[in-house]
Amino acid sequence: MLFRSLFWIWWNQCIPNIQESLEKVVKNLSFLVLIVFCNVFHYLFFSYNKEFKTTTVIIEQGMKINEISEMLYKKKLINSEFAFDLWVKLNFLEKKIRFGEFQIIGKNSIYNIAKILISGKFVYRKFTLVEGMYKYQLIEFLNKIDPSTSLKVTDIPDNLIADTYSYVVTDNAERVLENLTNFSKKISERIWKERDKNIPLKNIEEMYILASIVEKETAIKSEKGKIAGVFFNRMKIGMRLQSDPTVEFSITRGKKKLGRKLLRKDLKFSSEYNTYVNKGLPPSIICYPGKESLIAVSRPYNSNFLYFVSKNKNGQHYFSTNYKEHLERIKSIKNAK
Image 1 (tube, rainbow, N blue to C red):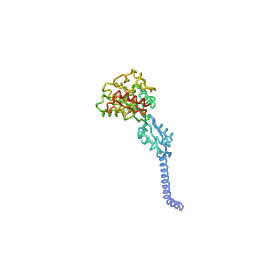
Image 2: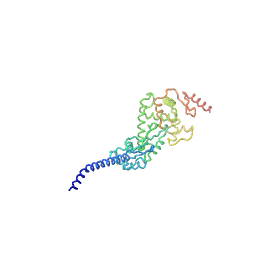
Image 3: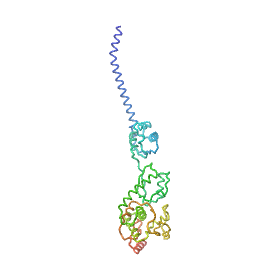
Image 4: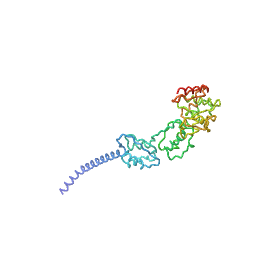
């Protein structure tokens, strides 16, 4: 009895100490588990590749989350495919990820990468529709960015401005062409609205046609308005435009370069585009003009000039008010050679 009594006295004294020790152990274990969890959570979702580099990522239309995470893992942008999938699903981001081309720059985590992919901050590629480019050349470019396109030359509009344009990798040829058309429409309508109302043009289409001729005649900005003025002066007196670039286009139709100088017999080439044979404007553009050529046609240089001739290899011209003076200019150029 004495032993039992002593045991219970001892036990009752130890119990609080054991309970306290167990509570300490549980607290320590809980804290340890929390630390481990936080480290794992940080490693999976917020740790980043320490290599400071730029990686291009293309999310194609129709890609599933597991396909995206697999690609990111192969590019060594994330530490775990599972973690990326989990983060996207837990945050309901599946339908928010955009299709397109993105740049992952430098240090990034799953959190940051997911944020980039839903931001819509795409990589915009650029291409230049060069002044004087033909429809066939534009078709070739559209085929390069979208080999599946069924666009033909007849599908390409005339009213496009030669300029530098942006597009994203997921754009098809039709979308790129739509962007070109919308931009050109906006700019050309403003230019047409601000035109000199005395110019003998009926509509924007005619402005584009004459601007395309001016574009081929000179690349010098300061001379575009003068050359446009010459053509308007010829139109006012019923004179043919007599533009060499229209003859070249009549022969090649913009499919290739002529590869030689124009001959006198070429000036009689039978074509609705040949302005040596026909009065007035050709039926459509002979190339894509730049903005400066459109402005030059809309607000031409006011003069009495009727003729111009190239005076040097830099493309500069002499301008004359009559044919006699024009012939003298030509003679002086030949004598200088």
